[in-house]
Image (cartoon, rainbow, N blue to C red; front, side, top):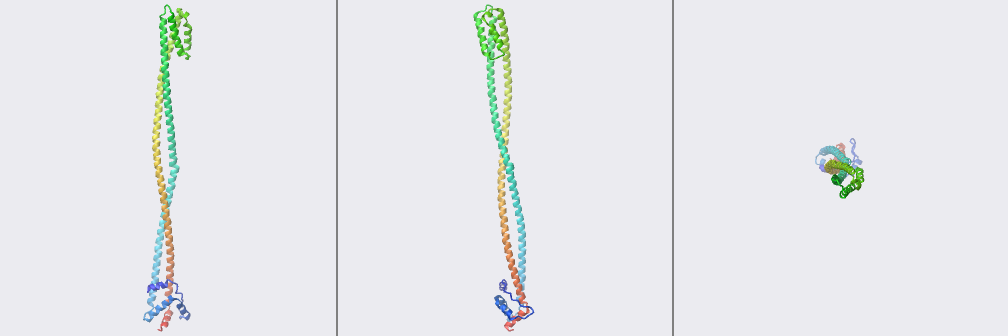
Length: 364
């Protein structure tokens, strides 16, 4: 019975108005007959009254229906209110997580663009400069070694020349010291030694005056004169002293050059070792930078994916809530319509004139 009444009350068919204080008129009766659902209520009432029943059961049923509909409507309001609260919490949470993801993306990308990439470029530039420094260090070291080798070879050549010259002077002095009756052979030998000395040292200005004086004195005529021979011996001795001094100076210069060369090589080798150490450090820093750069790129990518997922979840939540809100609105409208119809039916059935009308139709 209740289900039939609910179906009836879902339609707005009970538009027939019966004045509470006036008897039912013919016009009102015609209005009742125009609605099949109003006619159904009338027929139902006729059956109730004809079997000795009363309309109170029907009235109670409709009143219970109204109460039930109002309770169900309140449950719908409460459920929607809880859903709204949950929706607001979810939206707040998702929006906050989206903001956090956006902040992480910005911070990570800023770290990549303004810290890691410039840092990597600096490391690469430093490594390039270190490579240039190492190559320059090798070039200078090789140059120092070549120059030192050339200097040492020149030193050996100079020493050989000086020793040869000293030997020639000693031989000449030996010949001159033996002169008692000068011979042509002795003269020629001294002349040969002087020529040898002149050839070896003709480009050395420090020896030129003495060699020139010796050549002027070493003539066959002077060679026969004891006074000239003594002068010649004196000059040879002076020349020998200069040769020995030059030999000592060459040796001292060679020792100093070797010391400076050793120090310079040590300095260059130290610089090379420092460059190599710097290369190791920069390679380590570059490796750490590239690892951090890779990790940050992955992290930014993950946070971008997180943000897209969260935005999709937020959109889905908003779409679902919008659909639920639409369903809620339609359901509430329908419930309000049903309650209004039920109340109209209740008002109709509780009018005394309605029962009088039904009784008159069945002849009671």
